Image (cartoon, rainbow, N blue to C red):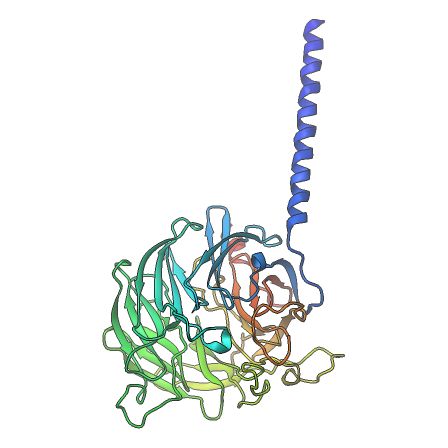
Length: 460
């Protein structure tokens, strides 16, 4: 009898323990949900939906994005427009992105661009101009910082390379020995392409450079209207670079990195305008490049031009089957506002309107590989998604526009406080991350026809 009683007591204690444990788990789950940043109200979408949001610890205006999986955790890295430094979010649960850490950068300096591969991160530093909140009377830093990110949260700085001028705008680093930089260099007008050897991160050194005729001081005719935005997209064999460079799409032979040589070029300005060839995106298996400019105007200066004051900004497909003779074969349809709004086109909305950034990071193992969908941010028109299964007939298949901002984090746009969607990244789970000048980070899912099965699912 004693044995039976003791057994019953043990069973009762065990049951009480598991009930208590279950209550703790439930409370923990509730607490997590309660702590999640709420998705702001007022967004509109077609065949896309928001699943998560982060206010980035109060630092609105996140910019360039990169994502990395370490074990079972996923980390989203980003630069900032209005703050000097870089933020790390834990996006293991994309419905509840968690702020992990802010890494301060140098004062009065742009830290908006960053790239990594394996355990090496390269972050760009440049003088912040007054229209973006910079102070010309205070010192600034410039060049690139090279970091060891083998500990994904606690980075270690390994090296610092300087241009000797105002710094670096965009960085490309697909891994290996060389990073490509859009750099301001002494003796040149605008930014030029510089290849940086970072095989010894503590002692980075220039390996090669290329510029367009007229950019170097002393060259005639002098060109003040050309600048390389970057990044350079490097072929898998490391022998070819694809660039959006000033007024043209450029293909370079870089088999000798010290002496890049032009293979082919397609000049697209005129007739297209603004920051004409912002960057290019090679489409695997199609002998095609996606090229887009960057829209300007729209409150980018206190008395600046309205959103569509410059010539039409290109967003289209380029055939590179013959790399010596690239040719434009299609133009993407222009985004249109939803019905019932007080404006009939996005030019009338305020702020900038037009293309800006696409999902360029597919060299990263945790970024979705490029297929038939193009994701492109359009400033006041939010994120637009296009199907390029037939590259000569691109079709808009989905879009997401964040709400009108309720708080100003930075000076732009000057004309109206409207959404200005900046960067986009898609991970191998199918999560789409976007940033905005006056918001944090939205996490989206595309729900339309042709939705690719996430790479993570294909691995199982």
